[in-house]
Length: 245
Image (tube, rainbow, N blue to C red; front, side, top):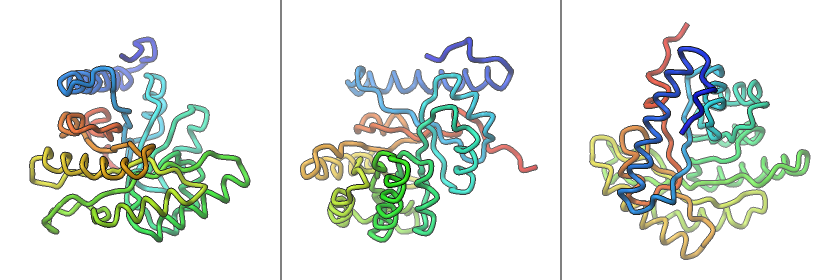
């Protein structure tokens, strides 16, 4: 659990309580899924919340944070460089933003088209040449909704193999696995079961690409049941979006 000594103000105490509650849910869900010794990585999604909150989370032991807007993420990453955090880009990404994202991101969870793979590979290679950064970890975002009205983005299942080959063949990228968002207005279990099958097919061709980025505040238990290795939790830890201004 988190270190009580890290909490020095009311907001830190609030974050600690919320973080502990989520960690207890993760431990319980993993035990129920028969994977008590195999806990997923917790990525705290910090979009819209101030850098001060992320600094508090780092003091409470959080090591991985997620953002979905490049401008906001870049500013926070620069401000908090001394915290040693791993930054995950979890939102839809325009190819023109690839160069900026590579300055701070350890992983991108929303790779869904060949043009984005190529842009990330070029930007990652440039960063490797100048800074020696490690390859960018890439999760292929898979679209799981059959109904376009509830579609949450992502590549078609039949395109996953093609995207995987493109990522794996780029020396500046690392194929990490798959990612998905459960469809709105439907139970998450069928979607995550489908994602697990997509993951198994991917791992059969690329054994190291065994990551499954799935599960948010409302459905983390279902995601863990179906093998999630990375959870993206925001509101249950940080609370609702702070008011603007």
